[in-house]
Image: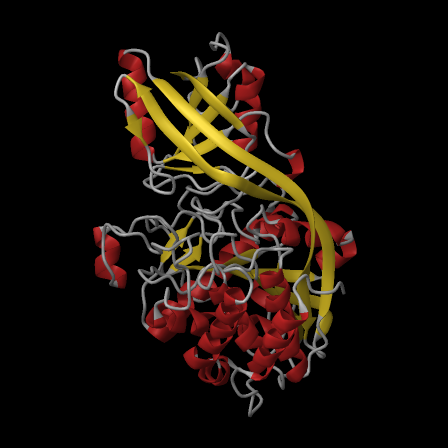
Amino acid sequence: MRHLTGGAAALAAALSLLGTGTAFAAANNNNSQKLRAAVTLEGVRAHQAAFQSIADMSGGNRFAGLQGHDLSAQYVMARLRDAGYQPTTFEFVYDAFFERSPSTLDQISPTPTAYVNGNDFRIMSYSGSGAVTAPLAQPTGNRNGCDPADFAGFAAGSIALVERGVCTFRIKTTNAAAAGASAILIYNNIPGVVNGTLGEAGGLSAIPSLGLTQALGQSLRTQTASGPVVMRVRTDTGAQPLSTYNVLAETAGGNDENVVMVGAHLDSVTAGPGINDNGSGSAAILETAIQMSKVKPTNKVRFAWWSAEESGLIGATRYVQSLSPAEGNRIALYLNFDMVGSPNFARFVYDGDDSTGTGTIPAGCIERCKEGSGVIESVFNGYFSEVAGLTTEPTPFNGRSDYGPFIGANIPSGGLFTGAEGIKTPAQEVKFGGVAGVAYDPCYHAACDTFANNSDEGLDQMSDAIAHATITFAQNTSIVNGVKGKGNFKSPKTAADGEDGTGGGGGLHDEHEHDEE
């Protein structure tokens, strides 16, 4: 494993954290009730406190390839070793995206307006640089701009205004640039600002690319129907190669021909420490792994802490791409936990079988994946309704978090999410508490995503559900893939299937920095 990027003082300070945390498993926590009792809120929060301390000594973030992520990974591995695991690393190099200076967006005419970065718009990761003043123009065909033919007759030099949906942000941007657009503005198809990425694979785009709120995009579309609207866009971006790594650890025992994977991303954005996004999921699965250290599961359980998720699911994607067909077939299922402690939380469960028809399940997710993912969803919903006595809502299963590469490889997947910058509805206020009209996480991708940016109630509930699903599948995956294990495992009721969830896709959601639309 490569050396840390920070100096000796930072390393010594980080190592002082390695003795912190909760007690190890005192008993064989081999069923849901025992493991849920052992995975405490205090234990999860202790790991989040360590991540906060690491960010504090690392420039305020835990970005993949920089000191904050390195020290976070060191902390996770040390805790795992203390619990008896033998963690390994999966190293890779990626081109990290950076803003050299903040982006700006202004309307020059007919109504001069300076729009607010972070509220009205956000830069797309891997956007190109540029300073452009030009009139707005919409595609002449479908307004989502997913087909080059949509831009037939497009006025070269104009700034393209397109709607989110159907295809990736990269495709929209590529089509607009090929038609001669000088920049592109992609507005949301749900409330809130688009927070997307063009994906690392294509490098920086040829033109500036910004994501807008639905309200601003619709307003600009209406204005352009009445007359010329001149906008000014400025971006200043770059990319540089960084070395980073995933952390993996698996149980010593269990059937290695039937592996249950449990994962969460460990990196944050550069803007803040990322203690909810995704110190919450990382801490919850770390505490679950520690409290399972004496369990002898029927199936091997492999825990993963992914890197460079915030740059486009890179760590999980590289890992899945490295698997041989036989290795992939040995993975019975994957569970993903990204943002499970949002302060204005909702209880979202990934809609594995797309029963609501709101997701975009990859073509690679066929019978094994789609059916198994629906069963995983039913296990979470059954736990919440039948054991915890709580309601849930489905969130679109569209590949916008680290489960994306797994479902793309036909591996059944599922998980939990408590919301990002999407807005809580009045119905959700009644169902989950909190405040309607406010984001699930007002500090999403911001400097204020600190240890204080948390709901103890939501994190406690989700940590229990994580422990339940992990030990349940560790002992028996028969309802997912027919491989028998301990107990008579029957599929619980699908309590929330068919409800109209508005979670936005989970973790990388509609709201997260990911390439999938």
